[in-house]
Structure formats: C-alpha cells, structure tokens
Length: 247
Image 1 (spheres, helix red, strand yellow):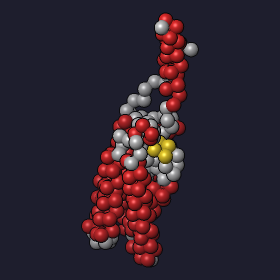
Image 2 (cartoon, rainbow, N blue to C red):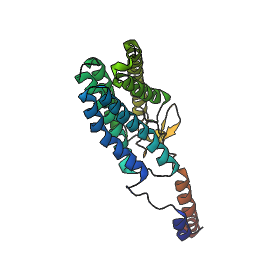
Image 3 (cartoon, helix red, strand yellow):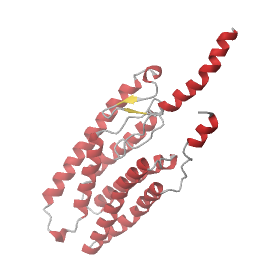
Image 4 (cartoon, helix red, strand yellow):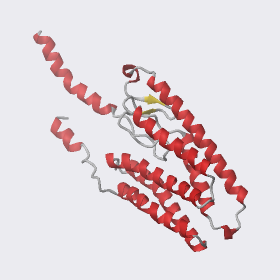
C-alpha cells in the first residue's frame, strides 16, 4: 500500500464540535443550575437539584462511551471532561457544607485529594499517564450516590444514618485511592524514561503518554499507537538497505 492509499484509508480528523464534547459542555452548564436549585430549599427545588445532578452525572458516563465507540476523542475533551467532573462534585460538596448539611472537614478532605491528584497528574504527565483503576471508579460512584442522598428532600423520610454511612465510605475510598495514586506516581518517577518508554504499567495495563483521561473517571485509556510506528519502520527499511548496498 502506497502513501496515497494509506492517507485515503486514514480516518478524518475529529472536529471539536461533536456529541461527546457537547455533553461535556452541558454538564458544565448544569453545575450552576444544580447549585441554584439546592440553595432555594423546599421539596420541589430539592428534587430539581437532584434531577440536575443526576442528569449531569449521567452525561459523564455517556460522553466517555460515545468518545470511545465513535472515535470522538479530542484535546478539548481530554481537558474539559475532568474539569467538568471536578466542578460538579466540588460545587455539590461546597454547597452542602455552606447550607450546613455536610461537615466542612469532609468537603475539605475530598477537595484536597481531588486538587492534589489533578496537580500530580500534570506533574508526571511527561513520563506517562497512570491508567484508571477500579478503586477510582468506585470512588466516583460512591461520591455520586452520597451526594444524591444528601440532596434528597428531608420530607421523604430517609434516615440520616444511611447517607452518613455512604458518605463515610466515599471519603475512605477517596483518600485510599489518592494514596494509591501517589504511590504509583512515585514509582513511575523513579523509573528511567528510556526504560519506561513513555508508558506506565498500572492495575489496568498500560496507558500511552498522549492519554490524559481522568484516572477516576469511567473512561478507559486509549490504546497505544504501535501500528503507526511499525508502518513507518517498514517504509524506511528499503531505503536503509539501499544505503548499505552503496556503502
């Protein structure tokens, strides 16, 4: 296959305006709607806040699925998706603490973990990307369930101990996965770059250096592009042979 045929067979570049990125933007726009409904008080507003938070959380799962299945991964999505996730969770925790329904130290610990791990991700990104772990996904699920339970109107009669237990579990898993991430990042930093070859072995396997997906998010890392490198080497072999014959 010549270069022209290979160029024709390659997929067209993905535009920034696609369904996955639209869902990410929708999730960001739902954050102020959720906060507004939550601070109003009353059963109706609480249910509205729950609907906004639940809908935004669902788009987190949906946009990742669409991006992988339809090949809609873009640089904008890699940056905006984790920002949208942290904005939604952070706004919910801060608002619940502001209205006196969640202890401030719980919010502080969770936000400190999220901000710290996000900063650590960018600090080690030159050496590679630590792939998502099952613990990170469990952390995200528990946080969503706990926040939903706290947002539920008190008139529904949910025992306070139920939401407190779920939030406690979310806090423990959040801190535990943060420690695990730090350990893996330290191990990766101690590995020579030529030996690591730009990838990081994790609980899920390897992640390529170009993948900046959220390690706590539902999406899995994109596959490494080994096929492109092999094709380039195959095209160079005839030229190298001719040079050896002339020498």
